[in-house]
Amino acid sequence: MSTRLILWALAMAWVGFFVAGRGSYQPFSVTLTGAAMGLGAGLLLGIMFSRREKRKHSFKGSLSRY
Image (cartoon, rainbow, N blue to C red; front, side):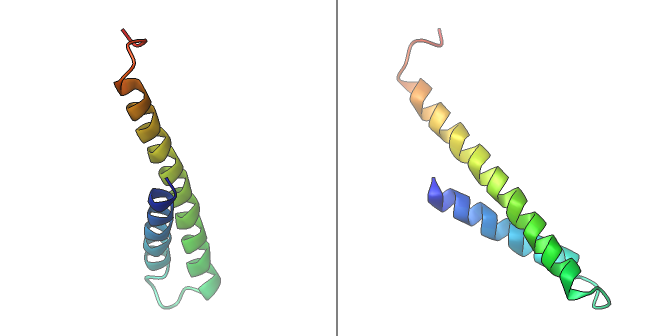
């Protein structure tokens, strides 16, 4: 779980940093805000996908769904 969470957070922070910092006229705080927002989105995505994966594996051997 932690590997997936770290990878999503880093990838989204990187995307947010470069998308927000596209124009050179933007102040550095705007670029950092984009990175922070990307980091938050990455953490949420990582948590969501890791919980989904755990649910998927826990139901696989169980007959309680049927």
